[in-house]
Length: 208
Ligand SMILES: *[C@@H]1O[C@H](CO)[C@@H](O)[C@H](O)[C@H]1NC(C)=O
Image (cartoon, rainbow, N blue to C red):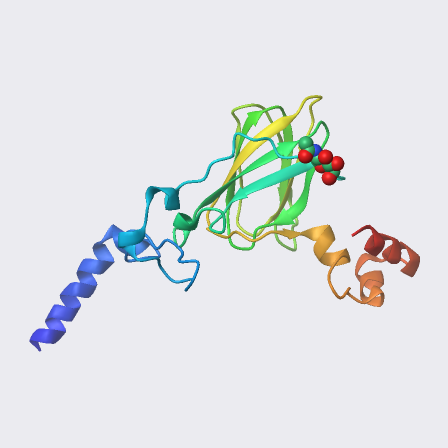
């Protein structure tokens, strides 16, 4: 009986404690590259919580004209279990970050330089499209899982910082996933899905 009331008191205390809102009951769990568990806290150093390089512009010489520089748990081991990460995105003039989703994260984007047209689309059946042009200093949020995109609508380079609510948000780029999977989705399926003919689907598949 004493044990039971102790247990109930402990559950009550924990449910009231803000610590319980975190996914971890420890201060941190730096990824141990050998075991992939937590590194011994005594061996953890400041460098485990550190990443350098977001001052460097990504190379946007590619068909989309954009480059994402991620700082996820694989780049910064101290992010492990903390449900947060960050990325720098560079855009050449008129470059795009093509429609994609993050299955595990909401994204909040801040424009550091330039002008970006951004948008996201809600779930079926509405598929409502929210769209806005952002200037330097503007902030926009893309809710978890929804398809979203950005385009540089200026004549100079644009730069943004994205914060994401996962240490490993995942990225599904719609075109690559649908037309560039390995092995490919049967073109008969894509024909019907997109109401297109076989040569058009083959063409799209060749592009990804
Ligand atoms: C940027 O990427 C392009 C295409 O891959 C490459 O040709 C070019 O050398 C790269 N530029 C720099 C500065 O790395």
